[in-house]
Image (cartoon, rainbow, N blue to C red; front, side, top):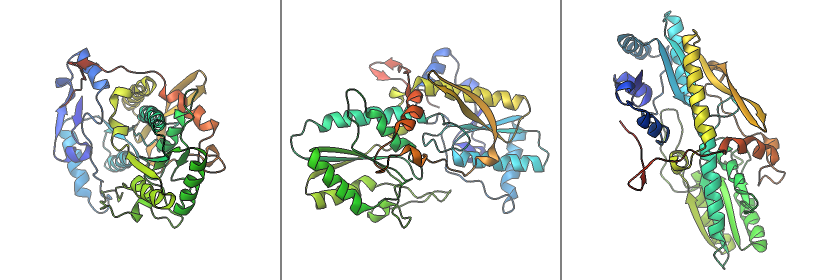
Length: 371
């Protein structure tokens, strides 16, 4: 079993390792389960269009042939499925016997044709716990206070919606949830905050980094932060909570703070969902089975069988129908005031955060494995 270090970009540099030489014991395998981020690394490299750069594809397939690769699996989200689609198209054009299978993994949960994606359950669990703790901490202040928490989500608000999971018997939940699915108006937002603070001195708000104004601009573009764009044309989004915090402080004349959960949302492996980890391994196994049975140009999808008790299974979908398509939060799962999630979302998300995978501690700290 070979692994590409840093994805397709690493493959182009022949940066390939034999994973059997790295993971040599059951203990290392268990530590790998608990290691955050991407063990093999990641990349933001976009394969060129075939008509404009066939040389890149020729190089990739020459490398794959050199290593006698028969099955190629690529783990990731929309952009990774775009890579699988392009490689499969070229492979078909040259009658290559290599089989290409996409394996879903993205905390954004925005892949089409799958109930959800591995990674989302653990990130949702982390967000729910952190929001619950922040809400609790906000109650210690006797003076008016507004906390705005920025959560990942460029065009889909799945992660921000997960802040609603904080609500329970011991927590009233966040006061407002703002997602990219709903056009954002800064003035109306400030007015809502002012109204909320008349009822509660402490206000906690969850906002997606990708909330957009009615004219299509990201709210964070109103700030002075420096922007960077990756190979897929995605601009880095940061500064939304900071900008809104400053606007609230100026208009409402109250103390505010902004918190960016940032990369902690995707690397907090000390607080993962066992359900999520289990399904991640299930889709991996299903991908191998599909390839060995001759399938290619497919992505493994998760199909929900039931909510209570929660059960799921896997199925194959055409990767062409998934690549570069974003699945957004259904509008009917958002309340009429566009500030909270309704019961269907909680019914959807809560099973995905169940159970835990305890970390392995050595010398008082969690243990990870790395290349």
